[in-house]
Image (tube, rainbow, N blue to C red):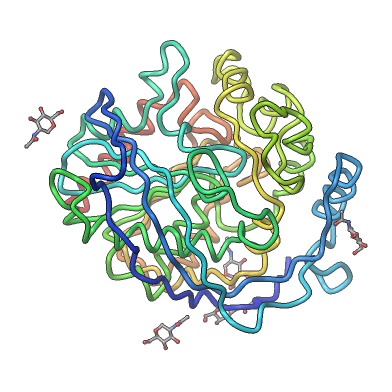
Length: 383
Ligand SMILES: *[C@@H]1O[C@H](CO)[C@@H](O)[C@H](O)[C@H]1NC(C)=O
Ligand SMILES: *[C@@H]1O[C@H](CO)[C@@H](O)[C@H](O)[C@H]1NC(C)=O
Ligand SMILES: *[C@@H]1O[C@H](CO)[C@@H](O)[C@H](O)[C@H]1NC(C)=O
Ligand SMILES: *[C@@H]1O[C@H](CO)[C@@H](O)[C@H](O)[C@H]1NC(C)=O
Ligand SMILES: *[C@@H]1O[C@H](CO)[C@@H](O)[C@H](O)[C@H]1NC(C)=O
């Protein structure tokens, strides 16, 4: 597919206006040595002008057709973007995060589309084996897992004008500087590792490639990710997208109509799980509890952004469930060679493409082994 880069990722992140925790912010004590915090971030980033209007599920059906059309993003059917703002737009957001552990290496976790930070710390009965945060704290790391803006405990933002890829990259960039300068952790971060899943993997790669953060990042781990965008169509169509506020008014009634969710638990089973390698009750949990809507601005802005993989210098590990739909079209065999080839500036590139799992790797039965592969990679990088 050919996507024109409408703006480069030259975002200016202003210093966080205040660093947490402070007396004015309630800090909730939790097991696992965790605290809920909220981090104010001010940034100044250009915006895409996105030309779609979503009012109801009929519109979502039409949007899904557009997004999955064979030539979407090509000259015959361009992205729904009419341009960019003349100047960067300044915004202040509150980022809701969970900070755990007391190690001097901090892992910053960025979740995927249609999810929240609960992905890293699920709470269904028996979820300890799937709890990445718990495993990481046990392995000696500090962990910052946050909700993308628009989602969960972070600021509600406009689904078209604020919830855009380059804005989310700038948020992550601000968190990187925050964690290295603020005294949020008992031990301030001396080393920083970015770990991203799915949409969060693209954000992680873009942040690691950016001038703003490149030198502050010691390693990155990407999951639910194979670089390209060729297999988004089955994922998006299979999700059976619906307007979130109509689907669950009590939970999402305050969101604008441009926030979308999956149709039902079977849609989640299709896009996230591989039969025989997961427990069905986990897909039910994903739909009922783990799920958070995504905003329509997030996809076109990702597709219009040129992620310069060659600018990533830190060691990279890509860990894939073999049967991932959105990353690999359901079979990752031999699918990671192209992204490996694009990571020309990275000190180390390691890939694992055959774990028995679908897209939501951490929530499959293989999770403890996947976590161990990641910690082993980090230890071999001296982290
Ligand atoms: C993306 O950025 C790279 C490096 O700056 C450049 O070589 C390439 O031409 C750009 N690609 C597009 C499609 O803009
Ligand atoms: C990043 O820094 C390099 C070298 O200082 C500069 O040439 C480049 O234009 C910068 N890129 C962006 C997107 O600001
Ligand atoms: C789908 O694409 C057509 C053609 O560009 C456009 O007119 C229409 O508004 C799009 N629909 C949505 C919901 O974005
Ligand atoms: C760090 O956390 C571990 C596990 O919770 C605890 O046993 C240890 O005492 C803590 N160390 C410091 C210096 O706080
Ligand atoms: C690798 O880079 C090329 C050239 O920029 C690009 O067209 C392609 O989509 C990239 N592939 C992946 C998997 O990132």
